[in-house]
Image (cartoon, rainbow, N blue to C red; front, side, top):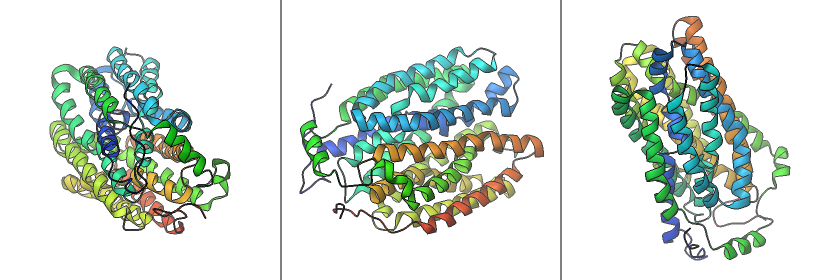
Length: 415
């Protein structure tokens, strides 16, 4: 266990070495975390699992819907633990447990119930590794450059979405989907845990307590959030984003192979390009949030996501462009959410507010993942589902127009 990091500098809170190290640790932790391995890169496993067990695509995809619903249940709990015990302790406890859950999937029998239970354990044992744990650590070190810092930290999901598909694409042909998950389990424990343990920092406990006492009035108490119109707008908008974005990512490889792409080309070219776009989006969106009203940024990428849906439906050969647009959509969502929660509600109930909206996002994701596969099975193609997804994304973008100006600006406290 590392020594407590130095306390925050009131004059230069953006330039501390512990803050920079925390961002670096977050990049590595998120790159090999459940957001990448159990959500954004799962499309590579769908067809191999179908082939081995003879299950339908809806049956196989239902496991990932279960993952999404377990995230819904775990997110408020993660917010409570992070607020109560601090992000470092929660994250470091969760990393080896998450690695164990991936290793357990190696032993999946030809039994649907067992298959679903094993996948359900992944978000439970990886409780502390969803973005909140890392992002709350980052928010303790940054204010005026909060958007850029969050974007850089969340870039870890882009890094992982670029690297992990390359790893799985090289492992699956030789060792199968089981061996790929076992290999990822080893990387989580051997690479992620030591780096995060060294880099992820928290301010000195005495300083944290002093700041907490000094800013009791800085923010909206969790019990009062239901009176905030912005809170309901964010929940509705992120539900729609979850309904579309994650379902599209989960079906990218099967969608493209049915359109004539080879599985290898779909995995290497499109998924990797998607990951690279997600990486670029994390940093660029973070930068723009510090200078442009964040809901406007989210509106632009949501419209881009709608265009990606239409391109996938009508022009699958333009999949590279579609993957880039989709990468920007996924690259913006949680950066924007983390930023807006602090700007609208302050720090008092940051973890719980984030956990609730994050859970609502995955409530939509669970419906979307199975729903898109079901529409494809009923209609014979993904086209109808893709057009519906485009409409939902446009609706989400329109809804964001209703968000008010920030309550808390950089460098200010509650009035």
